[in-house]
Length: 473
Ligand SMILES: *[C@@H]1O[C@H](CO)[C@@H](O)[C@H](O)[C@H]1NC(C)=O
Ligand SMILES: *[C@@H]1O[C@H](CO)[C@@H](O)[C@H](O)[C@H]1NC(C)=O
Ligand SMILES: *[C@@H]1O[C@H](CO)[C@@H](O)[C@H](O)[C@H]1NC(C)=O
Ligand SMILES: *[C@@H]1O[C@H](CO)[C@@H](O)[C@H](O)[C@H]1NC(C)=O
Image (tube, rainbow, N blue to C red; front, side):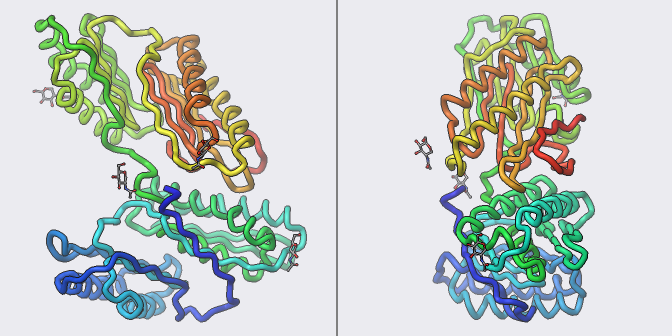
């Protein structure tokens, strides 16, 4: 993810006219005339549709000439301003990115992009333009805190269903100074990638603050612009690999068995077990074969069902050697079977680990805070009545949160659940020191932490202090 990250740090020029573009990005040269034809068609589609509705996606062409496009106005600008902006954006792209297959332009009021790779619906924060002001506010700490709490309200609004990806708010800093905040995701994003995108945006605050000391304290008159630009741009600029919501994360197929009779039973019994789990999110079959199917406790019934049905198919197509035991792991669910009884027992023999490639800034502090968070999460998961689920977030630096989740299989009692999550904590120490994010999956539990929200509900709580908050279902 970091490899893709390019930040353009620009000094803020006060009150640039809204007609000027804020920045652009051009990449990937092409030579064929067919691609140009596709680009022209996509741009003209975008202009005619987005000027009416404020948002449009389009694609044109075939095979390697296929071009995707997206145009969007900020949710709060008038339709006239939107139309002007979209028209300007299309002209600008043609002028500044000739013969380029990936082009993006940012304006105060709108954004336009086309690309030969399909980016629609994926959070993309590979590129961001950050504007900042070098003047300092009086009382910078209070100011910073105020900005943090304003931005979290604004983010929360932006990820609500039906918000069109837009969040706005203001906060009275002193009787004379109001801070304005705005966040906008492109409308093709679902709430989860939108929330992840906005977290990446906020994560960049301290980066450029360290770069320019003055930024910790922007003059508030212009801060309005800072936040506005920052939040307008960032959503367009995370790597599509930051979340892997669908598709298996991995599988384990045990040794082949000679007990053909029992293996043929597996597929019959799988069907029954999955059918039950589709309703309640959890089901076991006891009776050799033994089966366990479970969704993560925070995912919606719809995502749970999709996941389990896919798991049922995949476990059979991945493990064709008729193994005596098999597990398939997803972000949202787990399916496991074995000819021997594993129900109620901790199993940490096989595991998958996904560490983030990037190291955290202040790695020692980060590890301390993360392990505190994961302790709380794992106690929560081991509580009676939690169905094995624990979630929480903790403030690491101002405005920057670490999100943690632990999930045991529901057949486990308090002690075995705790034992499994402790084993996950050990793996974090072994494989994930200093890493910005990491996920460990065992047969009996999983644990994960990230610098962005990855579980539900998305960022539901306001924060006024540094306490760990574990949202209750
Ligand atoms: C802002 O504050 C920093 C740190 O206190 C200081 O070094 C810098 O000179 C200040 N900038 C202005 C423009 O006052
Ligand atoms: C996502 O990950 C896959 C497999 O590791 C890789 O091939 C692909 O290029 C990655 N995509 C991006 C956008 O990083
Ligand atoms: C179980 O089998 C029936 C009949 O083959 C099929 O219609 C149904 O979709 C299956 N259910 C699951 C959960 O796979
Ligand atoms: C992250 O930290 C580890 C442990 O100090 C180090 O081995 C690794 O090279 C670092 N990775 C990056 C990308 O800096």
